Image 1 (cartoon, rainbow, N blue to C red):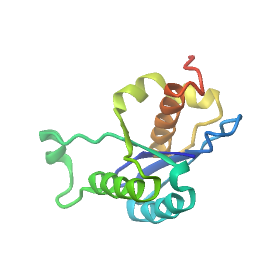
Image 2 (tube, one colour):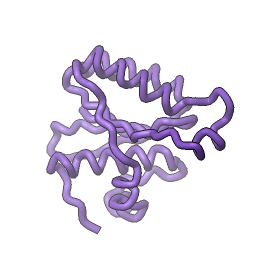
Image 3 (cartoon, rainbow, N blue to C red):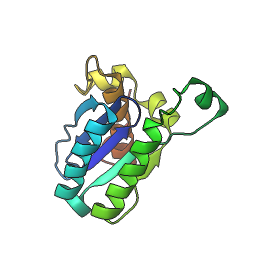
Length: 144
């Protein structure tokens, strides 16, 4: 099972059973605390068969200026997922650069495969991370 996450004030996530021949990811977005309750259950359920991939979040001077005071949802989501992964999956999370996935997996790419989540931009970002991880594993081909 593969769980990919776009962390933040609205957390997008996608999951797919990557052991199946037909890869049909499911995507959603939730407030971070609701997502983490769900992710905790998923980590307990799948354990070592779960791989968690998260968008890397880098703090810059710009980040500090535009982030609401006291709102560090992305950092908290990443840290909690790291804990869930080490506890239940016995390995660390994998981090992916957002620029790598955005360039390769556009909205048109998602639409062409029936993966696009209408009206859920954060879920679509998680689907891009899912596609990138599956491509790196040789499970899908990157074609435009």
